[in-house]
Image (cartoon, rainbow, N blue to C red; front, side, top):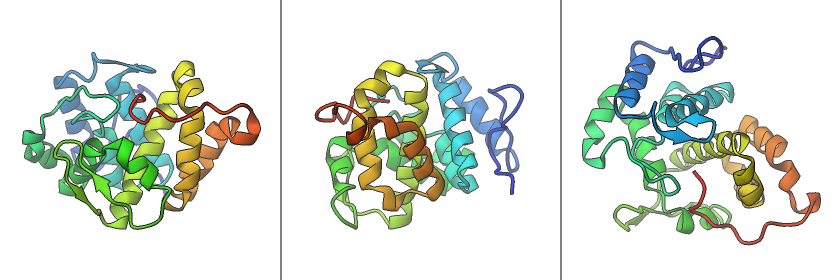
Length: 215
């Protein structure tokens, strides 16, 4: 079945999808400046669309694709340039749906220095909200969706910035290897294909990961 979401042909900035979700969300992101904000591979909007398209190629449902399209809306622990304030959550939820917005907020609020190591240390995974400092345990489906967005985001960034790939490829390879049980088969295969050269037996390691320095 052809995934819904950003189109896989024509203008890379053109999106389509169920009802008016995709074009309305793209219009909103443009209005908030995503089309002018520099980001590896072009602009932040270019990146957001590619991530949503990649999630669709991996078989993600429409909610997860919509979350991928807007995953940078509130900023992240590695790219703290928000397009939307967290006081405007209802506005984004009206555009993409409550489920998709909740995933965007989960992704944005993740304290990576705390959560990423926990992804390798058993289940369930306890999250830390970087906005509030609160610790809580999301349902496993939410954690899976979070990691799927994380993989799509990081693979796209590294594909468009060789320096970041060299600096953080080994750490990301470790992260996704240790949490592979939470990834879809398609996402795992993509991580192996793109990050395999950073495996420990593929060359010198890159040292300790700097958890919040990538996008």
